[in-house]
Length: 372
Image (cartoon, rainbow, N blue to C red; front, side):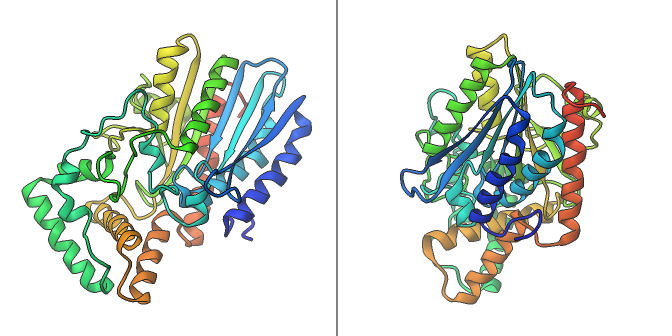
């Protein structure tokens, strides 16, 4: 196993459990809890709680909401457990560390869960709106080809023809929003948010509610990969937080902070972080929270890079539902998809670790939880 980046869900889970055992003596009370999936009890959501004597602050780290992204998430979780958790005050600051929100996706190197639902489009506060994002259906000729994947070259030619057609007829902005926003009407399409809360979503919602019931201040960092500049992690903040990206960058002493909106990042319907703010605003208005994502870019943020990312999503989804004409095509698609969310480049990994350290230190210092 890589000393920092694990090679399997099982290795990652075993390391998480071992590392938490080393942390437990620092707190007066601690618990390691396991929630096996009903569809496959060999896979589980594992969460570790460290409980302070006075419940003032809670730091939450979550990983693998998008399954395959959990391998980078595991590395960042280890950085936190090794280097930052020991610096917290166990008298008034607790921990909630979640390994693999989507263990099925992590195990199978997919973003979606066992029901082909994107969990970061499933955290809907209130009723699901199946009419949201009608452009996804309008652009189905681009997003959901109904055939087995041919050779990678031929499939790419077809893809580029469809992309150009879509950009000329609908425009780049409209295509981008339709692709990324999330949708609830095409179960065999990507970024499908479902029509009811998934099992994993319900588990996390319960944890978030309990945290707000018990603690005065909650700070959460959720780990993601795939979008943004290749060599610069972005701190992304839900639009419900009133802080501006400029203010946050200054506060956290971090160079790249973006709000989750079309102007700075992209809009998301059913986002987990946004759900947490809505829950706080509606039911726990006196509590303080700060929720953010760490988004590690992998291919870049140019138009060409974003189109390449879209291609990887479309091809992987097409492969899942319709298969491929040969093994060579399948391997090429899986390789591109894996590189989009878990790059093998050692230099990329080192920079990702460095960015994680800088951002984590900046956030915890800004809230007075560690000293610089």
